[in-house]
Length: 250
Ligand SMILES: *Cc1c(COP(=O)(O)O)cnc(C)c1O
Image 1 (tube, rainbow, N blue to C red):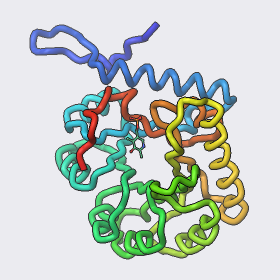
Image 2 (image 1 turned 60 degrees about the horizontal axis):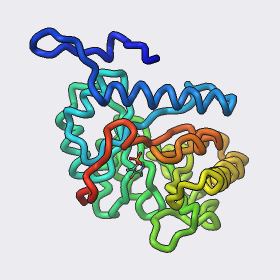
Image 3 (image 1 turned 45 degrees about the horizontal axis):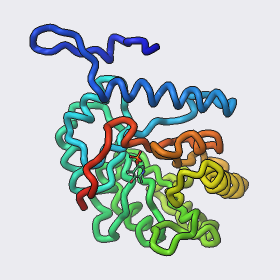
């Protein structure tokens, strides 16, 4: 049974109450997150739901915001910047989760609070140099190519310790943890194996960097396994906003 929180109910011009599709989806995703947390004997409050809003118009984000959603993830820089400008009246925490071209780091350093996809030192160094003085340091995760796929971005597990050591020296970055997009599979066992590897890597690094509190992993298709293995940020697009057009724009 869905409980209608007041904040999920909107009124149309005729005063009819309705709940948007996005509001309904958000309630279901939150319930799923809470159930997964419970089965893993974890507190739901230690898991942040990041709404992945790539290809979605600003009004969809506003709709989710009205239902209490505060963290939004964008993959494409220009599209993200446009929405940040559109929605600057809202108290949103913006996460950059797309591939980073090293000549495009400045607007990322200026406009986002989190970057999940740092996978080489050059990019990290530029982000640190270009982070303005006034906001706190930029929160970053190192993207790990956990399934060791040739075509994927991300640091290979073997290179992680040295990259973490280099990034940890940068003054305007706060190294928060690790992020992964494992090889897509419907096989629950394979999902668990990949996410458990991420957890093991985090534990190893925590011996040197106890502040590494973040594991950004789990999308609409593998959120259950990710939470079971220790995700602290799940990045959910489709289950909140619906199916995206087949080819996301670049
Ligand atoms: C698109 C995307 C997601 C969300 O994927 P869904 O399957 O729609 O939930 C999560 N993380 C990253 C990096 C993405 O690009």
